[in-house]
Image (cartoon, rainbow, N blue to C red; front, side):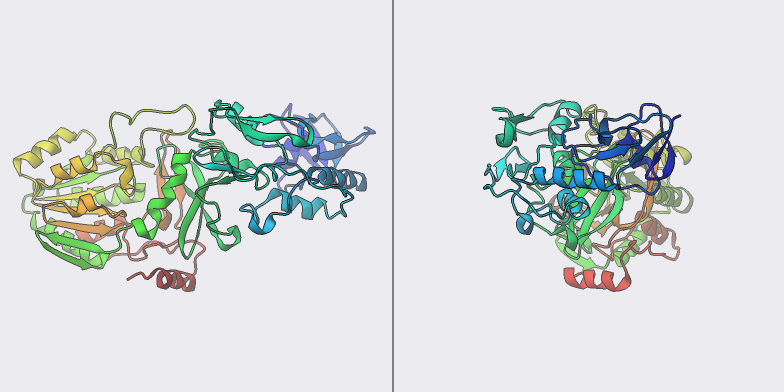
Length: 519
């Protein structure tokens, strides 16, 4: 493998690697100016900012399209390079508007960052800026401000090479050129907001996030997308008011650099207005509210009353919880309750196996594989859904415990299943989401608020068998429980509350709770 020297540091790269690849590969990544380059897209070489000086070559070269050769010595910190980059940036910004105070990209803008690192020049252009279209509706999710666009072509290449939907193009010539869509073909694919992520300026903005928060008012934490079994690596952005967005985090083994638009919407069920906040006991017309731990103790009483006939207690699990929670609840049912009636509730069997060829899967659960592994370990994998239906029809189920979906919207048969569950004498419903359909269940019912995947630490196994551990990021409903804690209550063990949110101190958590009016 060839070796080269970057700014005095020797590095070994793969055959065929470019100088830009070498910059990205270095442990202490050397900064290099660029706009059009993206590691997951083809080389365009249109911004001309990634200039480097190569020993023995009289002219500056672009790093993105120059292949490393053995012994090559490269630098981008000479005065010659800095001067070239500075005035290259001047040309890029000749017609760029001074929109920073109102631009959604402010605070995470590549243009701002690179101007501060490589620019700081006195502009010499006296001509008026070219005016272009603003607030252009490209499709259901994306808005374009043509004046801000620097024509890096990242978004065009994304629709050509990744989604292969080809909605975007560059139209007109010279300083009149701009990004746009073809007639009668809006930017309307399931990955459209990725164009916003890769836009290095504020030209493309997300309708969902637009003008809702300044990015410097948000914290972020690493987690996974719970929208399907791909388990895309993402960053969750939040503050005291709640969660505002998810953005993909690169992981070549799982999601590359992308995530789907459906997955981006999975932050909405995390927020307080969609959540079950208290335990809710309903028996006929009587409704009583209590803290979640008291609700779990009431549910444990129901389970213990049915223990005289262990087969009268059944457990239904969805693929939305962590490995650790499955192990706790399944082992509790097998060892402490003595019931082997454990069943897997599959979301929409008709579309469960579908795959769009890129990331999005019909299995809308982050940990179906982990659930099936836990059921197999405990000898419950062969239990069929028809067996549960028959037991419910015969009235032999005294207490049914349902670890329901944390995101209710991905289970279209919710009403149908609840009608079946209501045939049990008592139902314990565990979920983070609030639902009028669940509230209307005619059987005696306890609903217990559960933590979402961003509020607890746990391991999830995606469709490919890759185990990914995530850590608690924030506490939206601080008193909500985990499935492991419910298992402890049922077994009569001391309840050990889960990990405090990573990066959120006690004071901040208390402030969050007070601000959101938690009970």
